[in-house]
Length: 204
Image 1 (cartoon, helix red, strand yellow):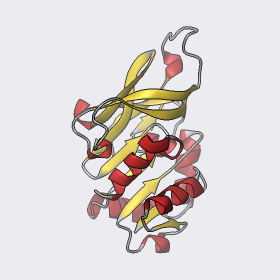
Image 2 (cartoon, one colour; image 1 turned 30 degrees about the horizontal axis):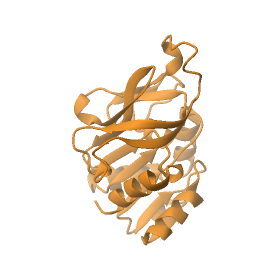
Image 3 (tube, one colour; image 1 turned 120 degrees about the vertical axis):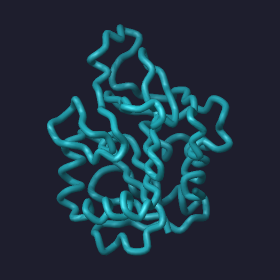
């Protein structure tokens, strides 16, 4: 069973619909009790880093998630801000992140990107898989995903980068630390590439 963490951020319904179309059992988790028997976890998110951490803390699910992901090694996939809060910290706010993937989230504004790169980075962009991540099985060649963000993840270790994209600068489009995965783009809006990635995660 795939559990989608419903802590008040992200398009939970879109993930439910896509997984049902793909033939996988899926449910929402709104409390720690809902996480029983979870085999896979989806951590969506949109908006600001601090707000996401505050909502996750307020949900009462954080300690249970820590136990499932860190102690029991249940696979988790963070998406957009759900990926960013996997980091240690962010230029966007003051809160500490989950720290599950060592790294920091930076603003594109910290670089002189020029007029050719308006913010937010919105729309389709190429994604180049790296380090043999199973998320991109069947997509080893260039694939395209939909983005909407102004901040990007920078891994401390290149070994935790699962894919790269470029928008004025190269950045980590996807991350992986053992059973912990994250993608900056929106697979639920990325047509057959997104469906394949979510299927790959479900079949880990």
